[in-house]
Image (cartoon, rainbow, N blue to C red):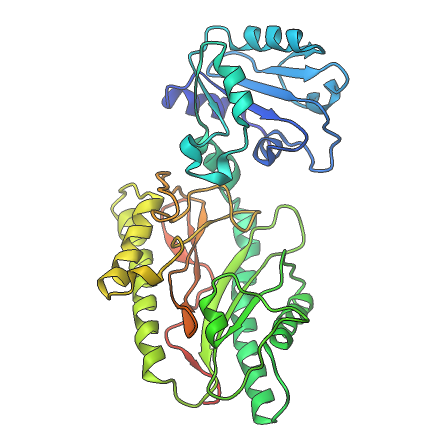
Length: 396
């Protein structure tokens, strides 16, 4: 990522913020490292600060034995060694500033942004400045996809849909052949399909049968799994990307029933979840079509209302969606007015999931997940091109 000081200063001016203070200690602030172009494997053992004022040149506040870590960045070098000299250099850099942005979220409302420890915040406040969240700055510098990232992601998204369908077909073939089949073997089938398609993941996919599908983060392994038999309900959640640091993720969830016809009790819940998914997507489309701002919490509200109106609100136990970047749960706005109230604005060139669910503990759970990308011109796209419209009747 190329650090565009002029762009940052323009945003600071528009938001009436005097400067952005980026801080790290021993890789504690991955957001700052990404923005500043510092590699994850860099040897960082001392605190550094990089201050970008609304006007003027940046300041690099670096420890005397690690001055090289910010050598690639523009600005005046302010070297320190003792704690007193650190205070002196911070005071010099922040002189005249009243409002400073840092990777901080009031009341830890957005944990993905809370990278600066309370003690460091206390230290900065001793210089007479008010610390505000850098949330909107972060969105513009870590959550926006490049045209190249979008172009690479589209075939990945479509590949995941095919792999999900192939997994259901794998279940069909195994059940009809009377082969022993379980959640773990289906999971490993998907992992092998990732390998064939040159995709990587950070954790094996979710394959949940019956009551396990009601656990949103259940995942089988080689010792913990359920068998899959005829008349079972199956949820598959899979996510993957290309194997390079700049690649962005795709993340979808599909559901199926191991039979020729899906029982009505599953269809009833499915229709509610599907309608909640589509209500959230349509809400985003309508807002962008009329050039009106849309915020993360509003998308959650649009989806959650459908489930609440159907009488299943207490069974929707997580936010509606998450930001998607080079990190699966990215640093952009989340579709959330449940776990937190995400008041960040959705911006063009960002992506996020929409994944409402109803989880009936001990019985079954249904989640339907799609990924959304907002183009620079405001066009809203579901990246996989295909969304699930009905529960897959696996033996049909």
